[in-house]
Image (cartoon, rainbow, N blue to C red; front, side, top):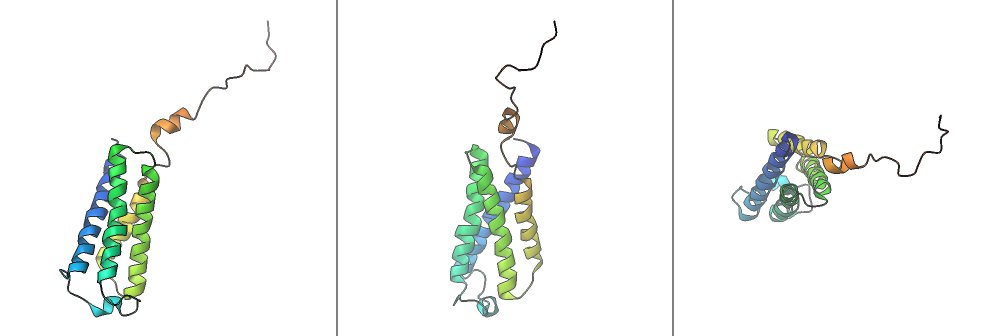
Amino acid sequence: MSRTNKILLGLLLFNGVTAAVGGLALMTGWIPEEPSWVRDTDFPSNYLPGVILMAVVGGSSLIAATGLVKRSEGWQLASIVAGTIMVFWIIGEVASIRGFHFLQVVYLVTGALVVALTPARPPEAASSTIEEPSSPSTGARSL
């Protein structure tokens, strides 16, 4: 595994595990209920945002990490989707709670880094796209 992919795996695992634990903490009350967090939203409590944080934000990162480790087809798409979900989650969180915490910057950066570090295609596919033409050349030959 390349150095970049190891960094990417670390970011995906960090985002996935912390989002899953954070979502679980919101759902179970480990994090005390803050009415201001849902005041300007359609959520009556922190429970549903916790489910979304755990399942969608954390789950997408953990699925992408698993795909990266297993080299599953489409892991790059899963990684880009997971990073994008994290970025949009943080933007939505800042907009909805109308508050700011330094961890939001951390997760915004890690989400953006996941997208930026994910290769467009596997390295072996990139090198196999350059092939010699199979038909003989039609140019004139000198004798």
